[in-house]
Image (cartoon, rainbow, N blue to C red; front, side, top):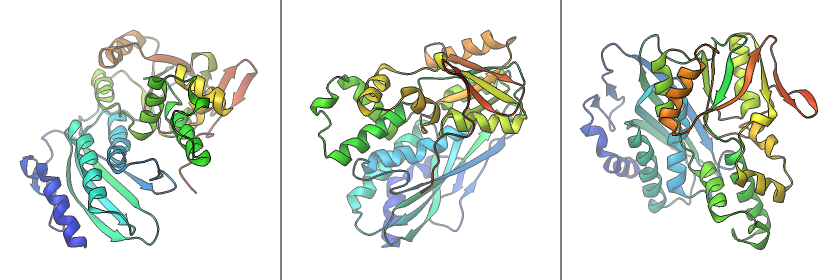
Length: 341
């Protein structure tokens, strides 16, 4: 079974043989890769566990493959890196067909190849009751131009690349449909446009990593700190605060929230601002920049995004993430999504 699966993977992923940086790929004890001259390596890894990070009742294998790649691509992109080589580990439960794996790897490779990355190896084991998927992604980065979390300063402006909470809104909708066995176009959801529902679902199942944006911001050399929003602002911005030794203030009225999220939040009885601040997996990019460099960075970001990024707050003295809204100031530090049972 394991040998058969590896052979099928090798056939599906044949692109490794065409990448001149891969001197030895799938099939040996280790991959042998040749980094570009004058570049540093950056590495990240993520694990997705069935019933913790995804539910196969509404996660088809193609989307699972794409999301497996996206969460790692987002990490490399958040540092301004160029994704290059991936290693995949699978803990495989019974009941998954050859068709499942074919769709999974087509989805995985479609996302990796979109950003120039190649699958070069990995491992497979058996699991009794849950599928577990772990991808390690290695990228290249220009020395002294990578984006980190530790250089934010008081007075820096906080920006994000897109609307927040959509991925969580899509997840809440899918969970509600599963719980109540509702058809996706049931009467109670008809007040949300078809396009709005599709957007929310896609943001959960198939999020877009901001790789090109991270690279553009890193090339400017003006961004002080950056992070991808995988756990929500309340937690991800707290990481920047902790690493930089300062605090942050978010302005509630400036947080970008889509019409679709507002509509579905009303139906589900959940605050859209709560989802925007604490929900994970939007994979938007958040960064801080001095007021002096704000316009230049804003123009660079708009050149990639096609619209101006959103200024949502400011770095301040202290060590907490504060939300300034109608009810005054609220401490939301580390109140984001927790990827655990």
